[in-house]
Image (tube, rainbow, N blue to C red; front, side, top):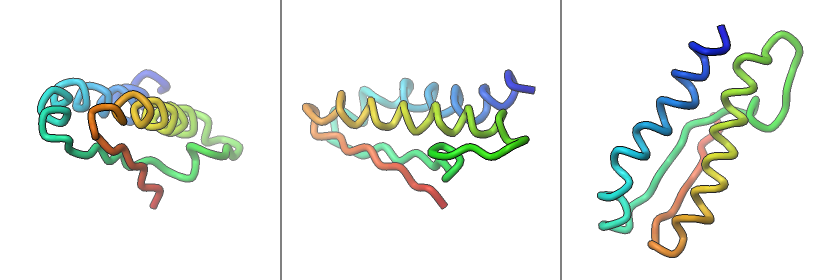
Length: 79
């Protein structure tokens, strides 16, 4: 169950960002990741989902720091 959730919720966005990063950097574009409040807090019986959303939050935070020198903004949307 964890592998499928990670593949969709965390590794999927990573693959998309990696594929388009050269174009995003060249155009000083923007990366927007849709996460969840579960990326910041955990609740019982949601650990599979919480782990993946926390990973995407951390990825976004790291990318924000790494891409600043290229003029690329990184945002998180938590509906």
